[in-house]
Image 1 (tube, rainbow, N blue to C red):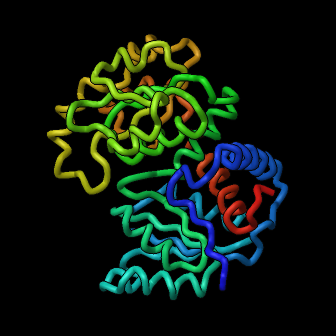
Image 2: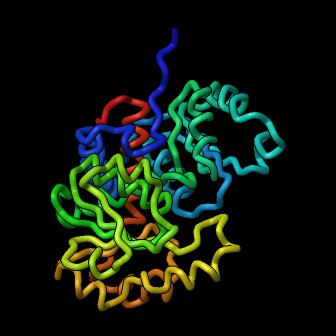
Length: 306
C-alpha cells in the first residue's frame, strides 16, 4: 500500500514547529538566492500548476521557485485541461499525479481542491480558494520574522472582508499564539467555525479604531475579490468606513508595519500614502511568496526543511 502524500490545503496542515522551521528555511533560501548560490534540492521534479483564477504572484512565484530549485513547471489554465470541458476532478487528479511530482491549484470552491488532494498520489498545494489562502500567510509571516522577529504575543489588526485572507490569518493566530483583531462590517464576518477555532486568539469588532489602536501590524485586502465584481459598488459603500489611512496608522504602535496581499486598490481599502509609505512592507511580502513556497515544496517533497 502506497503511503498517502502530504498536502498543504490549509495553514493548520503544519504544526507550529514545522511552520517556524519552514519560515527560517525560507529566509535562508532568500539569502542563498540573493548571493547567487544555486540550490538544486528539487532537481528534475515537475510541478503542475492548475489555475481557475487569473494570477500574477502565484503563478510567477511557483514557476520561478521550482525552477530555482532545479525543477520545472507546467502551467494549466481551464482552456488547457479537460477540467474545462467537464472531466471529473477525481479523474484529472489520478492522471495528472501519475505524471508530475507535485500539484498547485488555484480554484474557486475549496471543495474542489480537497477532492483533488483526495485522489492525487502526489502532494497538492492550495494556491488560493474562496475559503483560504495559506501560501500568502507563509509569505506574510516570513516578512514579519525578517523585520520584527517572533510574532508570538503581538497584536495584529485585520481590516476588511472576513474572506479567505482573514480565515488564514485566524489560523495563523491560533498556531503561533498572537492576537488578531478583525474589523469588518456587519454581514461580512469570517466563517463562524474558523473564528471559534481560534478561541481567545481572534475576535471581531465593528469599530475600526478599537481594532487598530496600539497594534503592531495592520493587514487589509481588496473590498471585492475575484468573482465578486458585480458587488463592487455595494461593497465600496459598505466598506468605506474601513479604509486604512494615515490616521489609522498613527493610532497603531509607532513601529507598526502595514501588509497587503496585493493587488491593491489605492484610495479604497488603503490610501496611497500608507501603502507607499515607510511602514509598508508589501514589496518584501510579495517577493517572499517565492521563497516561502520554495521552502514549502521542499517540505512536502523531501519531508524536511533541509
